[in-house]
Amino acid sequence: MPCRGISATHCSLGASLLAVCSSRAVKRTLRTQLYEKLLRLGATYRQTAATFEVVQVAVEGVEQLETYFAAYLLQLFYAMLAPPTLFAVLSTVSLRAALVLLVCVPLIPVSIAAVQTWAKKLLSRYWGQYTELGDTFLEN
Image (cartoon, rainbow, N blue to C red; front, side, top):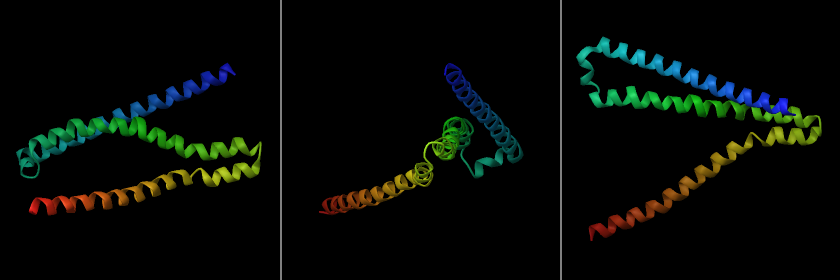
């Protein structure tokens, strides 16, 4: 049993390390490409974008990619790996239950998205009603 915990810990640390390394590589590549593009454009880049926008994208925009690569993609990988793993482990206990979960587990994100869409429509209708009342109040 302790070997299993150590193995899981090593796998988790390894995955986190790979995620951080990949995010660093992507950030380095993007910054290099952005810098080369600015050198090619010269001072004419100011015709299409303000200097603060370029600096914002080069610094903060690229830094935000670390969160995407280190956190989101890793969790997406785990989420895609969970249903087949759950099926493989549970099928040794009960094949019927494993099949039900294999079908139902991927429906969880779909149902969450459906509820979010419904809530967004409901809230926009609710707040839209009060926006119209506020406009009427301001006109009087």
